[in-house]
Image (cartoon, rainbow, N blue to C red; front, side):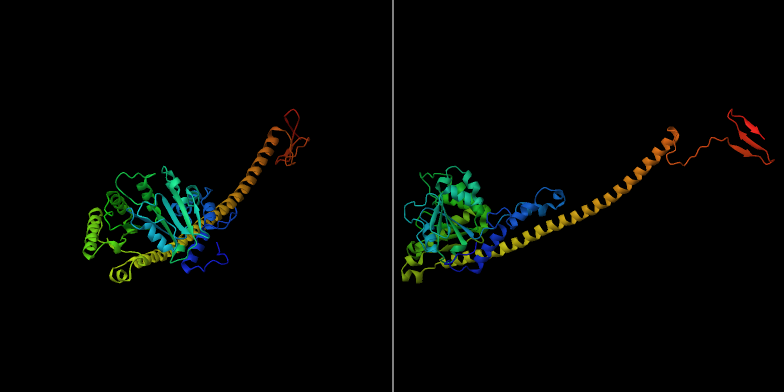
Length: 395
């Protein structure tokens, strides 16, 4: 969709992702829209050539899906770990409520839109087909929402944040199976950011159990952040907190050689002395998001090239087989004509023979019949004539 007048100028990456999405799905509402999705649906129909197309090409055409025009960052962690605060800081707008109390009780998707608006659960599921399985989990649709912001801070136009409820132990009951929801969302996430609170809540068993299970399948997507590091006490306390959390994570992860716990805090909420004295990896987190965006652009262009090559190969294969079928049918038509003519000639000869032998008629006049008796002249000069009684008469 081209930008409207008054919209900020799009970056190169944003233009590529948006235009690539339009190449796959024009979304113009016309039945004869010319996009890859329409071509793929047409080429993957079960026609006369369907079984002759290589399965790899046909599977690619059948499973062709438009790429999402932004990356998805899934935020998980314990209660009051600063997930909502980071989202608001990155967006540059107060989208999510922030409090020591449990403010995020549902699943909130934060993304850029043309106006500040909110979608409820049913509309969110309808707009994002990849979340269809999420709707199958009891109770989640009532606690699902999408928040749209017009912000263009940092790389927000190319980022989609999913804020999840804080994971706690004890008697707190969630209105849906929050663990299962997180596992399902992780399947579609580009990055999984684990936010851990340094003030005694990071090591709750529920949070660690979820992190452990996610790391088993999505370790490459995951990164770990010790948030609110400016509130972790003095240097000794900060060292102890980091050591305890790293030790707990290492005890639960299979591959820990790449495990890094990044410390971060919101720079606007810290004093100048704290900003100068404490390591803050929040800028590095923003750089990681930028790298994922660049990687997404490359992946989208690579998949676009492969999808176009696959569809072109299917077209070439069908055209070639159609040519062979045309030549075969043409050859068969010639033979059909020749054999038909030969068969008709044979029938004509057989019919004529039948008339000669059984119809006592000579339609063509080839066999003449005379009423005069036949005669034969012998060498001696005598002539023998046939008489009606069947006896020869010599003269």
